[in-house]
Image (cartoon, rainbow, N blue to C red):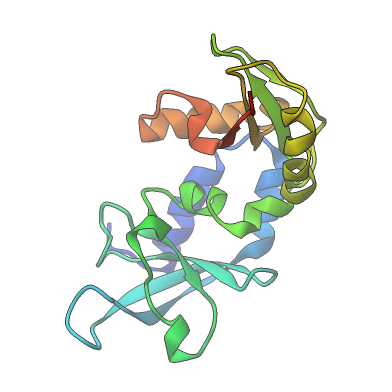
Length: 195
């Protein structure tokens, strides 16, 4: 399928259809923009080399965007996190760690998802049992609770901030199925509890 604005919207809608949390869907939709092409610098080729990238989502809060590009890191990883800055130094495609196989992978790796009140602190026991130890909240206030729970834990347990199981279990399971990952670790920002 040739990529154009219409087909990009179809791809994004297909991924949004896999989500079950209306808060996440509404948040993403509020940042979607009419897709347009912008030439971005490819830092791994000839000096000045550029590729056409389709801008599809803009996060005005962080100054980031989600782009789609069939070149460079695409077609394997065509969805990338890029800056929305207009100065030439911000017009690079960036590093490979900012490019993903799906739109939702890019979104969940961006700052745009941190505002959502879907994050909880979970304790993971050595046997793999996970227990939510906080209510849902935005990323920053939830992450700040890690030290509180870290001081009162059992040896060899870990603590993680993860999208709420009650809010996003279906969404995470679907992403795990699509990416071939075998655990929720993909979404964790893990920190071992101190002994």
